[in-house]
Length: 81
Image (cartoon, rainbow, N blue to C red; front, top):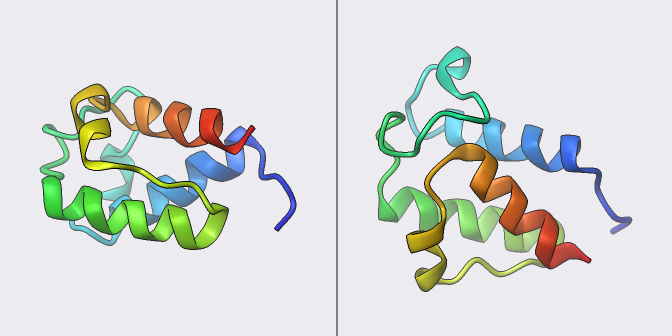
């Protein structure tokens, strides 16, 4: 797959998180995963989507550094380069 832009990655993350239950309008770059009620199982599923889409692995230890939607996007984009 061609390299995705940060905006495309952010949209994919938002689309995926929305399938886990939070209202789409609540999913902003600064929203915390805790505020969105995203748990470790949701993060594992997001990791699978990201790996399938971009070939980027999100590991369990990454959860400690990912607090917001923007953190997740930053992590994915940094591993794509």
